[in-house]
Length: 372
Image 1 (cartoon, rainbow, N blue to C red):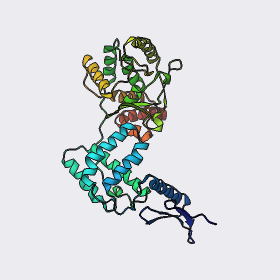
Image 2: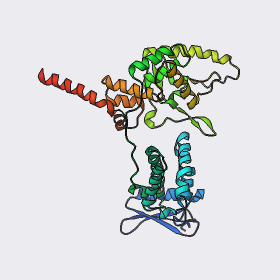
Image 3: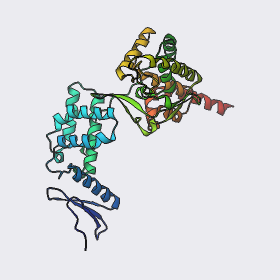
């Protein structure tokens, strides 16, 4: 005797015309159907719908508003797939800008002109193109999930032109200024931090989350395995690196290895402070806790002022690291690997401002070959 399927379980079968078909009954009594030439497509769709039924996050796609969907997207997808800092950013921008402006529109009634009007209004209100581009990215990703869940037939964000911020060369110190900075703070407790940042090109969160177990001073290698980020109401949170490529190993120059050895010896004195808790962090407060993002930036700006240098972002040390390597003739692929960029195109786009000089050098080299 064939077992009767319960509501919400669904079924998959192949039609006479060759199309695969998946069907599932919603709690409302309605039946949703998905067709595809590929069995895996309907199987994956059915699995998503079964999960939605179990969680109570199903929708018939006819009455749910964009606001309701975005809240569901934040709780069911963003909260489980993105890093804590990114989750916070998504939530803040969604609830501050997207839901108040578009939240009452039914998901199925959302049109490209709704999005375009929102972007224009935000720009008119004085928000930067960068912010509006980020809003578009959030909406596009959320609506792509709505398509996967078969709640809407298409992603309307595909038909919208988001503003593109103008590209400009990253702000950074010159090589001479970087040397002045290091000379100025050589006897300061955070000298090893600034030196390591410049020598490795690590991100701020990566170096603040660096543990001694991830540093091989004998081999002269740092292994990037986690990142620290400040999240509202949660304090400093350790999480996975930004991308798969961000989990990497970076070689250290001998002077950095020696500086870190001295730093580890100096850090041993922290254990004498009341309230010290050893979290095995390479760079930490005297209580063993990680530095906050804003605090470390304050210290960096103070170091710049002490050296008589212009105020730049901490990220500028990462840019200088990459620039020095490219100007030295290293292949961009090596620079990409050290920086942990997900694609080499990102490296090339960021540092295209130094390519003209490299092209002149290439021209000189090929001229030597041809005239030899």
